[in-house]
Every structure is written in structure tokens, then in C-alpha cells.
Amino acid sequence: MKILVCISHVPDTTSRINFIDNNTKFDTSGVQYIIGPYDDYALARAVELKESSGASVTVINVGLAETEPTLRKALAIGADDAIRINADPSDSYFVAAQIAEHAKGYDLILMGRESIDYNSGVVHAMVGEMLGIPSVSPVMKLDIEGDKVKMAREIEGGKEYVEAKLPIVAGCQEPIAEWKIPNMRGIMSARTKPLKVAEPKATEKAVTHIRYDLPPPKGAVKMISADNVEQLVQLLKTEAKVL
Amino acid sequence: MKALVLAESAEGKIKKTSLEAIAYAHALGGTVTAIALGTVSKDELAGLGKFGAEKVLHASDPRLDHPVIGAYASVLEQAFAQENCDCLVLATSSIGVPAAAKVAVKTGAGFVCNVVDLPDTSSGFKLRKSIYTGKAFSTVDLSSPKKVIAIRKNAVTLKETGGVAAVQDFKPALKETDFNTNILSTEKATGEVLLPEANIVVSGGRGMKGPEHWGILEELARSLHAATGCSKPVSDMGWRPHHEHVGQTGVKVAPQLYIAIGISGAIQHLAGVNSSKCIVVINKDAEAPFFKAADYGIVGDAFDVVPKLTAAIKAAK
Ligand SMILES: Cc1cc2nc3c(=O)[nH]c(=O)nc-3n(C[C@H](O)[C@H](O)[C@H](O)COP(=O)(O)OP(=O)(O)OC[C@H]3O[C@@H](n4cnc5c(N)ncnc54)[C@H](O)[C@@H]3O)c2cc1C
Image 1: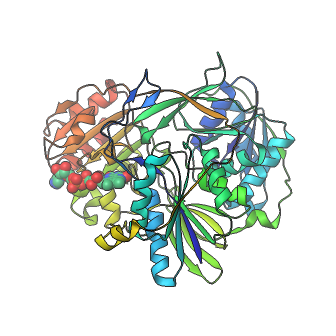
Image 2 (image 1 turned 45 degrees about the vertical axis):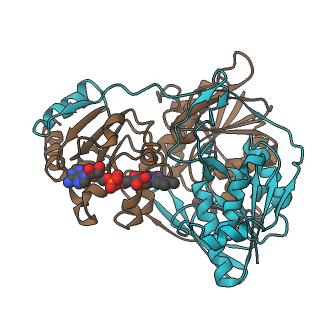
């Protein structure tokens, strides 16, 4: 079985978000980049399937040269080879089109339910549509049984058990697998694993980012004594007007 | 602009988030057709007129009672074409967003998700969307002639305006390949207030010490008609089901009131709640970082404060 895992290269979840150049550009200074946490779950499940059933795992990222350390980390975690599409991942449709271009021939295409920078959560569905194969998201459990995939998908207020025939695309989230930390051997071997760079295919662009802004700063917290919860109820009613 | 709106239902009722999508489409200024899938009563559908739908298409095929992504996408695409629409509006949801993403690919429409405001059409078509899990916003220009817009909760204020919508049966051609995923079974909490829809959320963290202590939290939630949520370690340890996990890697909520009990306020938790209108934090540690993100705070032991708060809320009713 051939598994493709799509990896986003995103700011660490503890990053302070700031913008520069008149709020037109993300400020990367001091920001640590990581494998998107949801993609990390997808990768962990792929590596488990590799260990249990001998699948091969390829990772793919749409990004410029600075994303290569993130791809190397995915190789250290256990992927066999990597593809980087040399382009700025500016819009979901563009990213999906690039992935679809390279995803033919894979049985299982895994990725996170969403990237944690733009949070759209649509790339899996778009890739599925472009390839004409089923897509399911957010998947919290995934097992292969013959030519079928059995999954649990989270829905509002619960979950749904779904089955589909391979090949499929799945957008993953916890608790599909536990995040894996690369070990020394993995890190060493990742240096020599193949990382192919491909040029993007041209697609039309419908969405252009113009400017960014931050939410207004929060006012000071009003502290209330634990012996006076009645005051809190009163304030929620008359001041915050939320009760 | 001719808008089609996905009107999702749960237990026979159109979801409040979908009512907001209808109100949003109405505010765009053109005609609004809503589409409902599966079993919903005609009265419920006619009532969508109140929020601005002129017409409601009803695809009542019982196979659509189950949210099959491929089938939903196929129905939406056919309705979009039949009604000659140029804009599809929907609320962010587990079925709506992936189905709409497929429609965007099928029709060549541009797609913007997590939209928080009405568009600015003074030049181009500019939409403001939430990014970095609520930590920032981006204003984007959506230049394609056909558009798909997925809105976040509270992108528009609901007010009842119009009258009664004309309900029409809609019989899309569904192919076997539209059902290429097979739903085997569903586990769903019934009768509870659902987290993504809730106006008030009562959320507990590791400070609650164990699942056996959730009773006081649930009682507080009941007194407020609130949904219950939790932090990630709480769902990781299996104290609470995963669909209650709030934060960066869980559900993003935007209620009127979020009450956090025994949650420290890690940045990843805050990412899921920072769009709440009002935040109350109850924590025994005065230094807990959550207080910095709160509107109101109480330093105290949850096991003492929460029952007192429930009593005070009941007394104030
Ligand atoms: C990539 C990544 C993604 C993550 N995503 C999420 C996410 O989506 N959501 C999330 O929640 N976390 C997430 N986390 C985890 C996050 O960093 C924190 O570890 C987590 O939020 C802490 O949960 P907590 O506040 O319940 O527990 P703790 O940090 O242990 O805090 C417990 C709090 O309870 C208080 N307390 C203890 N006893 C009492 C009492 N009797 N009465 C009142 N207060 C009491 C303590 O003072 C403390 O502040 C993520 C982490 C990473 C690395």
C-alpha cells in the first residue's frame, strides 16, 4: 500500500501572531515552524500503518525552500521520501490542485483536518473531488480492512462510523494516533532520504490576501470574591448583558 | 447576486447557525433560496422566510438524512445550477464545509471559510476571515464570478424580518458514486445543547480532578441552558468525550459567555475560545494565565465556587 501524507509548515501553536509592512505580511521573526499538529496525527497514523502492514509513506508539502527542515522532520518520524512543490501555499484551491497533481497512484491520502494558519479545512475535500475519490474528515480513527477503510468521523455532538473503498482522502485529527517524536536513528537516516522538488502547476487564483489585523486587546479582568458569586451573576446580567 | 444557502437540520429543526447563513445571504442584497436535505417538516421550512429566504428547495430523499459528503455536494451543485446562483452561503460545519469545497471545485467558484463579517463591496468583493485559530483576521478579495462563503457563528445578527418562504420539492439526480462513503452507525448526544451552537459554554479542565466530579459542572450548565466543554487533557484522559474538547486542536467556540473552571489558560486552549463575547474564569491559582484573557475572574476552589454559582443563578431567575 502506498500512503501520501500532506504536511503543512505552520507557526508553533505558542507563537505570538504579528504583522509587518503595514499589516500586509506575517512577521516571521522569532517564530518556530512545525509540522501542522493535525498533519502530525496523520503522519503518526501513516507510520503506524507502515510498521504494521509494510506500507510506504511519502510526505508532500507545498512550500518554498524554508519548509525543508519540516519535511526532514517528517522523514525522521518515519516517512520514506518527500516531495516539495516549490510554491507559496497562498490559497486552498491552489494547494489542493498541486497535491492532486502528485497524488495519483496512492491508495491512502492523509492530511490534517485543517492547517492551523488559515484553518479553512477544505484541502482534503478538494483533493478528493479533483481525483474523483471519496474524502472523509475529520477522521479520529482509521483502520484498513482489505480494500476497505473503516473510520470514525467526528460530527457535532458525537461521531459517525464510516466505511469507504480505497483509494480515499482523509482529513485527520486526534485521537487517530499519538504524535511521534523522532529518535536519533530517525534523524540520522532522514538526512539521506530522497526529497524531490517539483515546480507547481499553474492554476487560477480566486482569493487574494489584502491585509491582516489583530483582535482588539482585552480590557482588564474584573476580579470578584469567591464569597460574592451573586455579584458575578449581577454583572453578567447588567454589565456584560450575556444572561 | 443570487444566493443559495445550505439549511442544515438536526432532529427536524433547522440549525441556528444555518439561520445565520440565511440572514447573511439576505444581507448581501439579492435573492435568497435555501436548500434543505433529508426529513424536515414543510412548516419548519416555510418559516425560513422570516430570516430572508424567498424560496426553499427541499430534497427530501431519506438517504439524505445521513450527512454523506459526496451526496450533499451533488445536491448543492444541482440546486446551484438550477437556480442560476452565483453565491453559495453556509455555516461552518462538519458536513457543510467539505460538501461546499467539492461544489467549489465542480463549479470553479472561489471559496472563503471562517468569514466573520459582511463583504465590503466598495471595490472588489472583500471578506474578513478569522485566521491563526482566532488569533488574527485576514481581509481577502474573492474575485471569481462564482463564490462560496462559509461563515462563522455571529458573522451576522439574527433578526426576524420577511414572511413565509415558498417551499418546493427538489429531486436531484443522485448517482451511486455520490454515496461512495457508507455511514455504518452514528453515536450522538441527544437532547443536549451542542457545543458549536451554544450561547453559553461551561468548560472544565484538569483542575476538576476526575470525571466523577463533572456533576457540579453539568448542573451549572443546566441552570444556564449551556453546553459543556473541556480542555484537551480532559478528553485525552477520557474524562469527557472528544467532541467536547475546546481549543486549537478541538472545537472552536464563539458563545456569548464562556465559563472556564479549573483550566489554566494555555495559549492552545485560548485559541479556541478567544472569539467568545464574555469570559469568566474560576481557578484556585490567582496566577493562572487564563485570568489575563478573562472579563471576570474568581480565585477560588471550583468545588466550593461552582455549586454556589449555580445556586445564585437559579435564585436570580
Ligand atoms: C500542539 C498542541 C495543541 C494543543 N491543543 C489544545 C487544545 O486544543 N485545547 C486545550 O485545552 N489544550 C491544548 N493543548 C494543551 C495545552 O497546552 C495545555 O496543556 C492544556 O490546555 C492544559 O489543560 P488544563 O488547563 O485543563 O490543565 P492544567 O494546565 O493542568 O491546569 C489545571 C488548572 O486547574 C486549576 N485548579 C486545580 N485545582 C483546582 C480547583 N480545585 N479549583 C479551581 N481550579 C483548580 C489549576 O490552578 C490550573 O490552573 C495543546 C498543546 C499542544 C502542544
